[in-house]
Structures are given as structure tokens and as C-alpha cells.
Length: 156
Image (cartoon, rainbow, N blue to C red):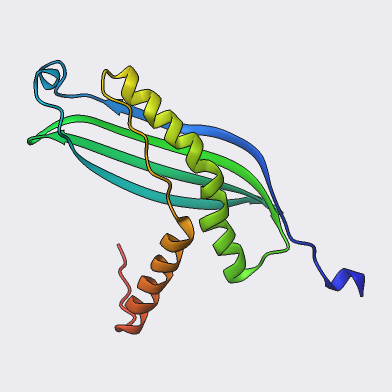
């Protein structure tokens, strides 16, 4: 009977930067303009099972800052981690991969982005905390609405 109840475990094994990109295509002319950027933030997570219980989760944050219509900078950070996750199945596993792991990775990505912006000659870019639980719920609701709206499948 003791084998019937699998103990749930979530543990960070390793945190690492998978990819970094920083571009400032309009430098040095952009530094002569008044700094009132329009900032666009794109956030994405991806996960893959590595082996029994170990998962790689990659949090990708892309920020584009424009002054007028010129791109001041574009920064992309893929912050990754290997997590030991056992005792979760189905929806509970997807929730842990989509919320708990990105919550661990986000502060590392935020610090990297801030540092890259400052080293690129721009003001600090301190990203506000992200509610991954709310993002996950919204993504699940949107997926359910798409499925209910006709179950259209897009294939390439």
C-alpha cells in the first residue's frame, strides 16, 4: 500500500543561460534622442522531458524598445533550468512546468536583461514580477475556447 502514494517532489537541479542576444541597431544616434521608449515584452516557456523525472524548462523573454520608430535595442534571454519533478501527472505536471519552474527562472532572466541594457548604454530595465499562475490559467482558457470554437487544427 505504501507504493500507491507517490511522493510529490519539485527540485531545481541546475540553472543556466541557454541563449543571449542584445542588439542596438540605431546606436549611437539613438542616444541623442529623448529617452521615452515604447517597450514591447514577449514571454514564452517551453519544457522537455530529459529522462525519468528530469525536465528542462526554458523561459524566453524578448524585449524590444523603440524611440519614435527606431529600434533602440532588442534583447532576448533564454533562461533555462533542469528540474526534478516526480509525483505529478497530467494537468498537475503541466501546471508545475508552466508556473513553478518559470517562477524560479524569472529572477535570473530579469537580472540578465537589466545588466545587458546597462552595459549597452541604456537605463536599467527592471521588469515587474510576472504572475505565471494567471498566465497559465489564461492560456488554458484560450486553448479551451479555441477547441470549443470548432476544434480547428492548423498544420504546416
